[in-house]
Length: 99
Image (tube, rainbow, N blue to C red; front, side, top):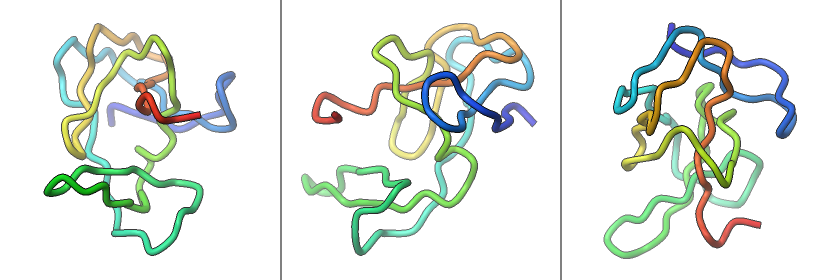
């Protein structure tokens, strides 16, 4: 188990490292279903040049936004962009259109 969910100082609940995660290491996979409407845990993916909303159904949905993230997405896969120590919150940049 690489990650746990607990209260976040950024927003509500967050995704945290349970173990040391090395730079470039796979953190987890966002699992979800296509969303018919916008709701709380949406991840927009580009598919064939169109943005498609996914309702995330696993604990990865708790990864919060940061302007200085320690992780990034490649499709639905999250990878560490730097070493993440146990207890550190895992964040990624939601994108330039996020407000």
